[in-house]
Structure formats: C-alpha cells, structure tokens
Image 1 (cartoon, one colour):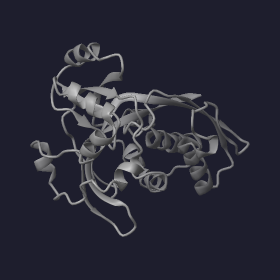
Image 2 (cartoon, rainbow, N blue to C red; image 1 turned 90 degrees about the horizontal axis):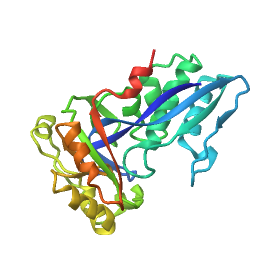
Image 3 (cartoon, rainbow, N blue to C red; image 1 turned 30 degrees about the vertical axis):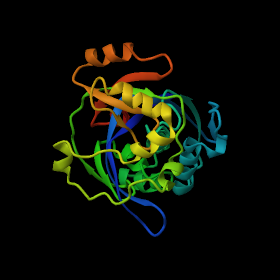
Length: 276
C-alpha cells in the first residue's frame, strides 16, 4: 500500500462579504498548507468494494469523507476496482484545519492515479466540490486566494513562516458559527495587495471567543508572542515565527491543558510531491 499525505490548511484571514439566497456565505480568504499531515494508505482491489480499515470515532464508515470520495470517483468513472484504505490521523477533528476535506482530496487524487482514471485536476476539483467547498484547494495543491463559497481560487505565494498551532479542548461546529446572528456578514471586499500589506482578519473569531472560552484563552496566551489568529471557524489558533527554533521555544512553554504542534507554512502542498 502506498502512503499519501493529507495536509492541514490554515486560513490567513476570513471575511464574509455577503449571503446568497441559498443560505451559503460569500467569502474572501487565503488558504495556506502546513507540512503537518494525516497519512492515508491505499491498496486497490478488483471487487468494487471500498473499505476504510481505520475506525474514526464518531463517524460512521459510509459517512466518512474518505469513503464518500472514493465512491464518488468510482461512480463517476464507472471503474470496477475497489480500495483498501487506512488512515493515520494527526489533524484534530473539527479544528478548522480542513482535515476531512484534505482526506477527501487525497483520496480523489490517489485513487485517480491508482485506478488509472486519468481525470484532470479540474475534473477532480469539480467532483470534490460536492463533498466540501474547500476540497478543490487541496486538489490543486497551491496556496490560494479564495472567493465565492471558497471554490473560486487564484494561486498566490504569501510568506512561508513557521507556525505554532494550538488545538483547544473543544469542538466548534461550523454550522453554529455561520448561523450566529452576531456574525459579521457585510465585510468590504479587499484586494490581494491589501492582504499582503497586512489587512484582513477572521470575522468568525469574535463570535467563537464569546461562546468558547478555551479558544479565547488560547488566543490570549498566544498574544504574548505575536498576532494570533484563528483558522476557519476554529477551534485551532496559530501564530507565526521567522524560525523553527523560535516556534519550538514557544511550543515548549505550552500549558498542559492544550495540545499543540509546530509546522512550516507551505505554498505548495505536500500532496503534489506524490503525484507522478
């Protein structure tokens, strides 16, 4: 079985510029990858069965995005092949790091190659969009300026610092935050140049701070060392450093009540290095 990475992403900012008639929010954000990944291993079979060999707590087998992605590709290409899949899970569930979407994207990319489906990235991204708005960015594999619901992507190359990432001991449901009446939904659009000059914030952060004290505490603790940010709708928060050594020093002082890690920002996803 060949192993493939499913990297984390962070949102370097997140604005909501409006709300569509179907209830979805119009966004502006920047996705950047981290060199911190789940690992999926794939073996192909000829019995048309998709089997995820790793149990994921709280997620039924057929509801897992890995299985759903495999079956979606299988049905789209009419292949008669199946797959045995195992998962080494490192990314916290519901942390805003895109773990589920990344797993789905890696599954599509890996099985496209393993099954010799020969679909283009554009075709895979279109399939992946049915699984989640941020699946396409993981398939294309480059840091991106995103608009629409997160699917309108333009590759950009922001700085690639080291990050300390904290996962507070709580789960923040995305639907709850996007449904909050306190959420700012009328941000003025900004440009890439204005973002690169330092503009932009995560408008979900204020809502999450009020409802989830562990996130507020983690942000406050990180503020000693820089300008902390929250990724997605949380719960993970991060701050950037120029060097790995600086990041490691701060991680070593992390209070025991939180889990955390350091990672390098990557404008090119670790997944792209596995594609032949």
